[in-house]
Length: 161
Image (spheres, helix red, strand yellow):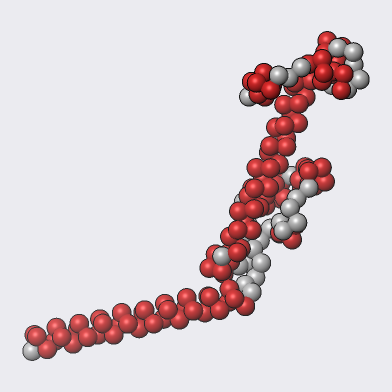
């Protein structure tokens, strides 16, 4: 994909070499291979892009978590439960990598407060009120069902008698 994009953009290997202080692409390629265990400039670039892509994919799961926390219902239902997104997984399994990538690439300021959390925060007042209302509705619904069931049984006994 990178190669095709370069062709479309008119990429010039000589210009890339000159940018890094080499007189031509052949010397640039040879220098990269000697300094980086046989890896060509393109292989090095693809490795960096792959690492950055993985970080941004993981960071996007933190953005989805942030969006969920904006919804009172979801915030209330997930309160105190462990986070199961790829950010939390990386935080548990690869904290050094995550720290390094955050230092290199940063993280949105709105996501920073959630970056170290492995579980959803306890319910705030709005979420607690939502949970109370959901419980009240469940109780009212159950009472209504009981009332309807009792009325149905009374009707059956009157019809039978």
